[in-house]
Structure formats: C-alpha cells, structure tokens
Length: 114
Length: 109
Image 1: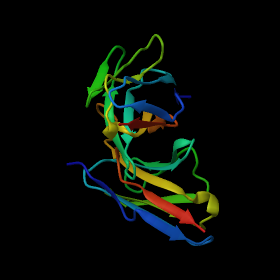
Image 2: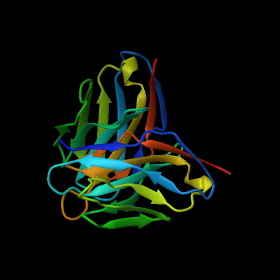
Image 3: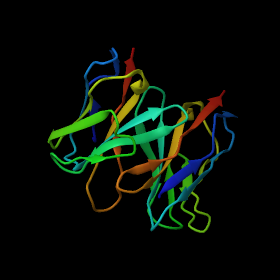
C-alpha cells in the first residue's frame, strides 16, 4: 500500500527557531511536494522536487527552504520560524510522468510557532 | 493560469440527503480533474478523478463528470451518511495540483 509519512503530527516551536519537517515516501516516486493548509485559503504549494537534489519554488516559498538528498525523503526547513508560519503542513508525492499525476498525501504536521 | 473555484461551506445536510458541491475551473490545455477528501485529523485522500471531457469519476457512491463546455466538475452523492462528514477539495493537474479552497460538509443523523 502507498505510504507517505511525516515525522511529527504536532510540533510547537518558538519564534526564531530553525524547524525541520521531514517527509518520507515508500513508493519510489520522483515528485515530492510541500503544501501548507490554512482555513479559508485551501492548500498552497511551498516547494516541490522532481528529482534528488532538484527543487522548484511553488506559490509561497518565502521563509522556507527544502532539501532532497535521497529520493524517498523531502525536508522542509523554516530557517527562522515566525508566528505567521503557524499552519498545517502537508507533504505529497507522485510519479514523474506517464498517466495521471495523482498525488499521495501524508497525514500532516500541525506546527504552532509561539 | 490554472485555477479552481469551489462553493464555500460549510454545508450541513441530514443523513440520506442529496449532495452537490460545485467546482468550476480555468485552465489552458486539457487538465485532469480530481476530488480529494480530508477526514478530521487526517491528510488528503483521493476520492475520484477524470482525465478527459465527459469522463465520469466515481467512488464510494460519489460521482463527478468532467464538463468541458461548462468547465465544471461538480461532486454529487445521492444519499449522504454521517461518515461522509469531511472537507472536500476540487483540484486540477498542472505540474503540481491546483486546489480549490475546500468545502466543509457536516452530515447530521
């Protein structure tokens, strides 16, 4: 069965801390994505990656960076956490090409920055 | 650019009522269309999908038809259950998915 896991379900951090959110998929997918979900705004794409060590900015990359050193792992980094980064973070993965670009999602990490 | 507009919620229905959640899209080319569902405390799950005009996606009693002439992909279910209470997202394919803002559905006994 397809599986995307995220390192934490809930996380509380202080303003200014460096925060790492980890995502692992076991499906050998090329593409991986980070979204944030906020009430009334839906899902917004932060970054995505289509291969190891490759990354592309999404719609709202400011204040974030990413790392993809291995195919199965995609990390989201908040260099200096701020209260406006309090949100639900969702990781997803998909095949690169061929057929339907269906994405598989992890359970999410609810991050609170105080 | 590509975008999705879906009806705002929350939608509250009684069990066994008929459900429609409207979704319209703007896109260049011929995108694939999706409905995802998010149950409380969980990530998103694919509910159904359609790849070309007039395709009908269906799953768990839910249906949606890809209508190119009206650029719509409305979600329907003939008889909702309490267990259908969730947030529903319409999405269309690009390199990443473009999501609507979500529609919260509450089904009461």
